[in-house]
Length: 436
Image (cartoon, rainbow, N blue to C red; front, side):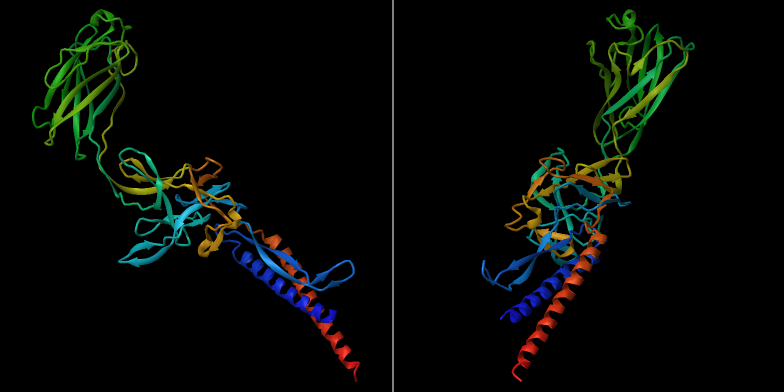
């Protein structure tokens, strides 16, 4: 009987609109949730009978339509670890299955998210606002090579940066062509030993003849001999006997002490090497004075005063942890108060053939399904993977105006289905009253 069919159809309509209300409610409630992906509602008609001569009322059911591949608005964040993906892809994250002595044990299930509001927790792990642990490829600290064979939670454990002993001092200066009689000039630079202790090196320059200078190297902290040695530096072709332009280094020789001077070769470094001992054995240091025949490094041009343009060294004192930052390639970089920065991991972008086929999980995360396909790890911006934007987060992709429009439509449809039920009930009652 069509009245019963109409009532049954209207009842399924109420259920379908209820499901739509649930999805709309979920979307509106999460309109401000970072990385949230909205759920739309698809209605499907199921038939009882439909031919050219007859049509019987059927039913309607709903299916969720996911929008995992629809990007939300990116907004800037003051959080240096915040990241967002422009384009396709997800961040790999892990969920904690248990805690033992404060140390987390991670679930074997792989999770993925677009919620990039990351920060450093008390154990040095990088987690987002939902408590999910960011995964990445590790970087070998000795070689700088990224290990793309395994993905694991990123933890910052290097709270102290090791010292780097000085191996090279670079000097850029102009020695005066006409200095005052018997004048000497001195440059001073601090170098570091293998323990990161600073020591002073004095470079004393004295002109001994026209276009000829002697540089004496003194290291007051050297336990063997503070006056480690000297060398003669000649400028121009006349003094050096080598085909170099006037005012440029033409030869380095007559080395004494631990100083070693190289032979002349056009276009090669004009440097010398000396050794200092600070109690940990001989530490060789190269004094880089530029290139033979070129006006870089040390020169001797017109003037009566010494002009120091630059004096640097490559040693580093020990440093303490300062901060953690990220860059556009997904590298996680640890910064130290000695001015050094070291990348410790790189965050890959996980790709799926059908991201809308992912299974939704708690905390704006997803897991792979047969419909989504297997996750593929790519570097940011390669092989179709989206780019990583640092200092930004991706907001929910829910549009409030659209959801309110859907809400009004769903409300009217629900009311119409309810009216169908009451109307069908009234007609059935009238039919029953015909017997009286």
